[in-house]
Length: 147
Ligand code: DQA
Image 1 (cartoon, helix red, strand yellow):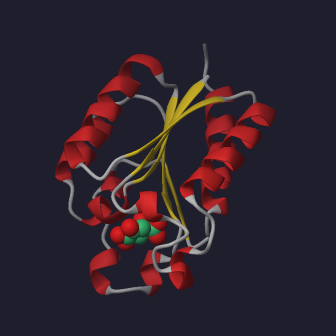
Image 2 (image 1 turned 30 degrees about the vertical axis):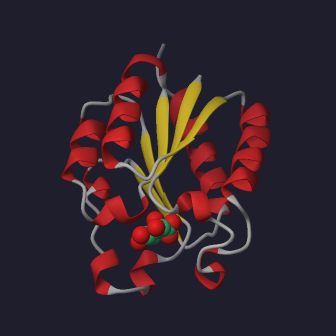
């Protein structure tokens, strides 16, 4: 099964951006680790990052055609984007929301997530390991689905 791993704005700067909050691993490191785990779990992944809300919406539409599940760190769009929420509502498979930091321990504006209204699971504050935890969850959800 194919899993889309989608990343929102500023995550291209991961490892260099506020490392005290987001750590020193780059997004390329995260992608490499996700690919290694996906192989073990029998999943295929398509890994994307965009700084543009509409481009993320377009990717979610693409996922409707080809993906069994979505892992998404919508970054700042988590807290603002009805468009990403609506796109995810048009996707039928499992959706796991990931935040590298513990958003609940941070500013009040990070406590609300539009995406959580659709997400089947949310992982926050586990660092970049959160992506791998999300893939493990996706593997169990996809494998327990009929057909
Ligand atoms: C984030 C948390 C968001 O509040 C923030 O805007 C990000 C990253 C995280 O992974 O912890 O850009 O989604």
